[in-house]
Amino acid sequence: MKPYNILLRTATPADTHLLQYWDSQPHTVASDPNGFSNWEEDLAYKPAWREQLIAELNGRPIGFIQIIDPALEETHYWGDAPENLRAIDIWIGEAADLGKGYGTVMMKLALERCFQPEAVTAVVIDPLATNTKAIRFYERLGFRFVEYRQFDEDYCAVYELLRVDWEILKMPNDINTGKSR
Image (cartoon, rainbow, N blue to C red):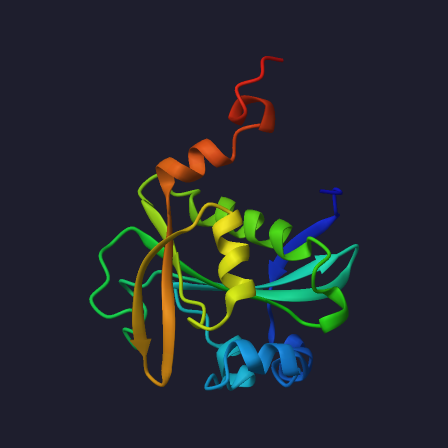
């Protein structure tokens, strides 16, 4: 994979119009047809259990990432989640930016953030059960299927990445393949 100069920055109320636009794109709607965000309110509210990030490629916004602590999240979307988990929502804004490896880099940056606290044991995600492209993407990153689950109106496939697996996967490729340096 080519190296990309992708950085994550905190999303701010100044990103409202961009996120509203991205939220209306067909590929975004298809991945979360029942989702609704009031970006103006969401971006102004900064709870300790959530991070909202804009991914930028050479300074150009290309995607959005939300990281939450499911045990502390106010709506209890994940139910009675145990402590020391994180959940990620990730999407690319423009269809023209799909399939270029940007999402992989974004997800790796998000996972680094999630596992920074030593206490975090796993990261969970919940793509629609019918979203086979997203599922393949997560599986390539080391996520493992846990269960199918109904979240409000959406039937999803729950996947998790355990810290122990992430520790192995984040090693340099020559270590993962057993080749010596």
